[in-house]
Image 1 (cartoon, helix red, strand yellow):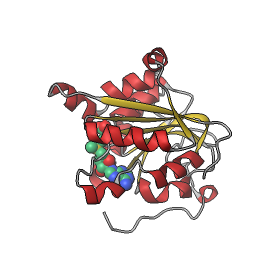
Image 2 (cartoon, rainbow, N blue to C red; image 1 turned 135 degrees about the vertical axis):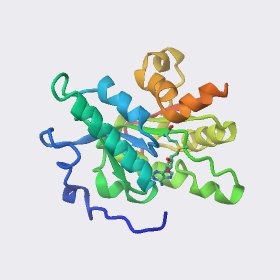
Image 3 (tube, rainbow, N blue to C red; image 1 turned 45 degrees about the horizontal axis):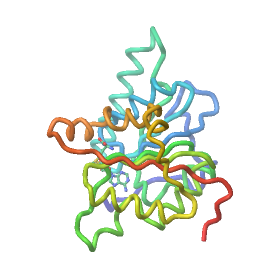
Length: 219
Ligand code: SAM
């Protein structure tokens, strides 16, 4: 994935009108990071019609698949509900370029669904949830905003919990009723392609959800 990416110098240099052509002053609030085939983003489109979701994916062919999927859904609903105008996909390396796209505190929900586990010890620093990147995510997520993680790899789940617990800007949401009532938790468990695959093979899914704390200072 070392080919060059085109990205804006700063967020206000980004033209979102090609991504959300029918939305006035588009402002992305939800991020599906490493979206794969886009199942979560598609679900969020109808769950949250008032919020803009951006799916981000590094693989060109997968990104194009999601783009065409959204294009088809938009076309199908043009005469009826006019849905899916609020979701789009962007090809980028989310570990490198997020602050080029979004302002401080712009993001309300950020999803990491079944991220690549990077099993080998020497590759752990390439995990998409890590201490350094959590500070970047804390910068982008609004106070009270939520960071969601789900994985079928227990070791990676324990890593997510360890890194997020240790970070001063995040607090785990442990209230089972609150998680149960959150449609995002259900969507990331049931609507992602990876989540469906794990369900078919009878695997376990581990969830850890964190709130971006108010007034937290970054050490
Ligand atoms: N979230 C999807 C799901 O649950 O079905 C896909 C999970 S898949 C195992 C992980 C995805 O993250 C892959 O599609 C991969 O290409 C993408 N990815 C990995 N590193 C990335 C990065 N730095 N930026 C954007 N996407 C990335």
